[in-house]
Length: 366
Image (cartoon, rainbow, N blue to C red; front, side, top):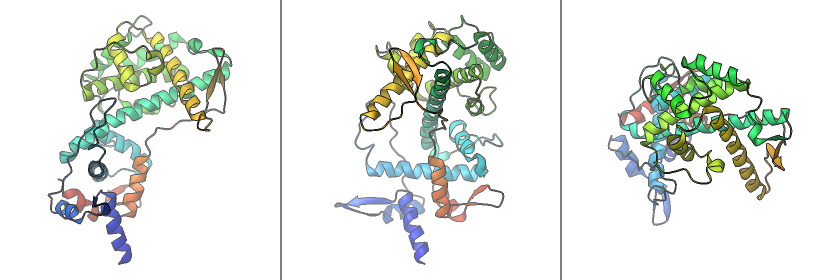
């Protein structure tokens, strides 16, 4: 009985049913009881796409609890709809929140009242993919530097076989991609290939397939995939967040291009003037600049994490090769917690299913 009571308390805490009254934090049994009657609150304030957003209510414990509750319910919804194999759970989650589809069957998933939360996670997933592309690019840059110690930033793509690179892009897109094509025209061609701004699991080009191809060690293959991924992410970002700013990029563009808003604003305003290879070269330079800046800032706090260093304009490798993974391990943590609290279970074939307890909690917002 004590174990069951402990699980009940932890379940309420996990789903954000706690509050503060007169400086004392306690379980929100009133809110929980209302939820179990089907009258619970799940609507939350979504953070607008503003660089300096600081609404205190957005960061209040109540709003944080609502976002936490939505996230856990989305996880339960995805498990219930897809019954994922644990070995590929990440792709099941990504496909559900990004494409709103079952990774295995490609059937559509309707999130109902959880739609606003699923849209928020879709926007977050854009950033997960985006950061992974840039970190894989930094990994590739380190390989280039290790093979060419003392290379200058402007020469990072000197060893790129451009003929092979464009041939790969042509094979992947079935369009005439060449050194004269602008970045904007290239992205527009992706839009035409997929017939829509948002890709799906059925699309000839989609982010889940390209994600796996980013692990290719061949420079030409990797850069072709990176460019395709950036193009798809730009289209989805524009569709999710609306029109991009019409302002000119800031003077710090070369250093800050790795910021997703600045990069996509640049593509919006200057992409029709810039061809593919110069764009990729500038992106490589900007990734190195940001890495050097971040490493210097961390060194001030006693942390050494330089991957490459710069001396007199030349780059040198400073550690063993890195191997990056996507920064998205929260779903595995959620899986472990919900398994422990008996909201989900794992069968003998390593598939996840929602338990009766999980279905009861999920049914209150259907």
